[in-house]
Length: 479
Image 1: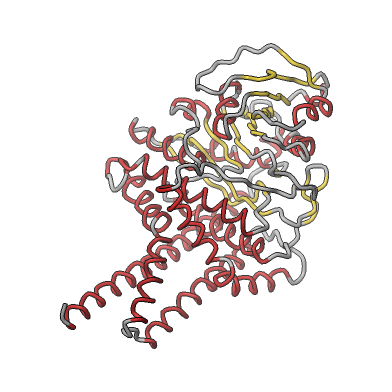
Image 2 (image 1 turned 90 degrees about the vertical axis):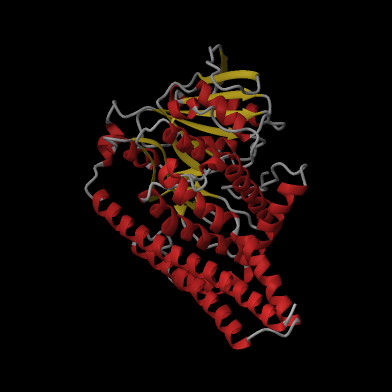
């Protein structure tokens, strides 16, 4: 290969990398602008909403909170108390004990005066069989609680059991170790009530990180900033994703995922599509894509809604081993979902789902880490070949870093101007400091996790789920 041809190839590759980077930055800016406009509009409209009417009305839509539990003995009693504290009239709580090997069931029986009851279950979705059976409380104070003990089948299987048992119109699927705010249900049901000429099939809200927060009797008492950089970095990451991303995708009717920590679904549609997929580790994303695909193929008008209210607080990984395992799982779940529903890709028959949402997730979520690593190796190759224009290279690196920091600072300002959850003096300045450090300290681990997730998906078939060890909302440690 002669020199001119080699130089031409290098120039083409560099333009491709530049084009990808420019389009990614442009998409983030556009999504942020749309999210900001929608959030302001939502808050204006929301200021006139009387939630006490939804709270007190006996004709409010019926909701079942479904919470899978596996070996949650250390915190199960407190967690269930939190779910039973909702300021909503027409709801019940279904705890699905998914074959726990500890004394979770025994603790629930003792704490909530549970007794075994006979119940005819409509098994519309195949699931693992029951173990000890179905339990309800003899105490009128806990009449909304039902506990189902079944053989272990995983989170998706446990959620499907809850779908089978629920007799309500809507189901709120939540991780049992998450803290659900008392007004979460009446805020989440609002998009379903507002729909007139279309059907809302699912809705999600903002998930916040509870690490270092003070929680007592199932209630959030004090919001604190964690001490570890990894935990603080995840706070910024969650804020960016929820405040400057998902609100825009909801407006564009292109939302492909609702956090598995908390989401509200139209039960009829969820059952019609076959419930959660037990063969994927990304069941929360996969069921949304399948429900959307189902509605598109039926030619029905629908929406996956999203609201910017902080509704649920969850515990994030506080060490890198667990963090990498979690992000590895997220990557594999994304790959599985996009691959399973590849028929949608760039297909105008699926409207915005096919020509906007799927391509974005494929290019900027699925392929972005791979492209970034290829870019790193390409840069190293240029160094070896002494083909680097250091003035251009350093300018590009600095601009990329500054944009990342700028985007995080915009997110922090958005949080301060809207819901302002971090009220303690000096936290805003600390968050800006975290924004400066996060691209250097946290991003390499996110990139490594994504690449490892790709490798495990294609080459390590024994990897299925991964462990998530938590310290618990009350300070104790649970897995």
